[in-house]
Image (cartoon, rainbow, N blue to C red; front, side, top):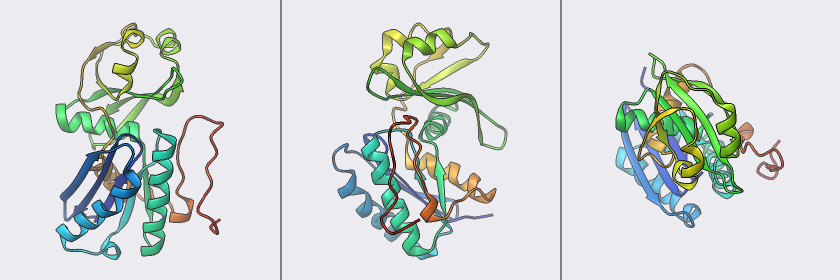
Length: 233
């Protein structure tokens, strides 16, 4: 089954767009932490023009639903809602941590990935994933925001070697070096739309979509409130 899906992500320093059409992927990305709002829509236009299709020709619109930068995640959700609502498309929310696990598989062939994004405030956004035979990822640790020292106390040693992904490993190198895990370094620092669109294709073909007006972020920090687009339920 061929699904045409557009994916966007602005949840971290990496601003990225990927369009999958007939299993061919068109990608744009730029490390531009302060210019996401300016760059993301031109990137969308570029991949659509390169593929020779319109937004209304798509089956779904995927987005990085967080965790990540509060501002970046809000930008991503707002643009995803606007594009999908205007084109009458369902949306597919994809975990940014899971996207980094997929990125680690794409780059290294990793099947066990430990993801840590620098969450500031002496915390990391953390999760571990194991790749399944169908290409989906199984959560080993629930996604959470946690001080590295607490994580060190809670985890137990296992038999796997975990590929590191995310900015948290460098930001809290000394603390995370104390984890009772066997790890290997990785250079996948950010989620990327190229990996989000791959995961979204699996989700879409399994019926895991939400209406545009119900698209929402995952911040992990409970005190952060999200306001939907004005005038929408």
